[in-house]
Image (tube, rainbow, N blue to C red; front, side):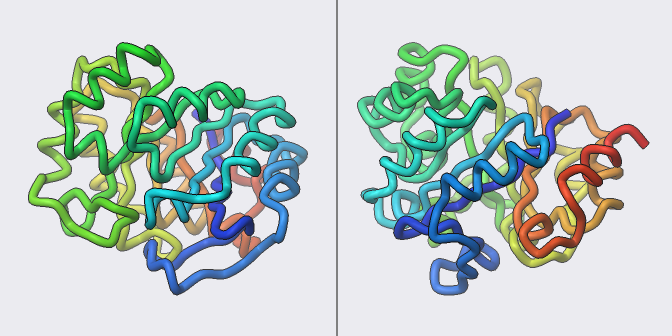
Length: 238
């Protein structure tokens, strides 16, 4: 199981948001690459990168940062945020990214999702961002009419490499992971699950480690030094 540090990029800076709200950000570095290197040097085996400008606005100027991270790091990198065309997904993969993450577009168009799975087999993760059990879209600014559990079930057997399942209410809030929701996610689909949102203590890490997850994304807890990456990785084996 992977402990996956998150590097969120907004206007060329490494930031963290509170519950995904675009105007409630904390800037941690002017260099996303330096931040990514920091996690690799600390022992990270996988990295989660989000283009927040792409997620909110559909367009961004952060691809240069994404390309440098993918090309200069020695570990797999997954990238999401505003990937809404096959051409963009292919371009992101061409930088050396291991997997692209699609969310809004995958929910809006199954045709797009299945075409993407055909073009980039084994390279596509789907992000399911849940608010009160419903899937949120467009950088979490809108809530769809689709139940997260229904979308999880639908993706079973689809060829999606992994599902990143986020509880928005916990994200960046340091309130603890929603263990029950993550457990349910692993029970309703055969797609590997990456847990996201609210991992704030080593106890959260230990509880999630008991579930059959591919990994867990950790953001603010690492940035705010609630625990170190090495401590989290050690907690997996306890």
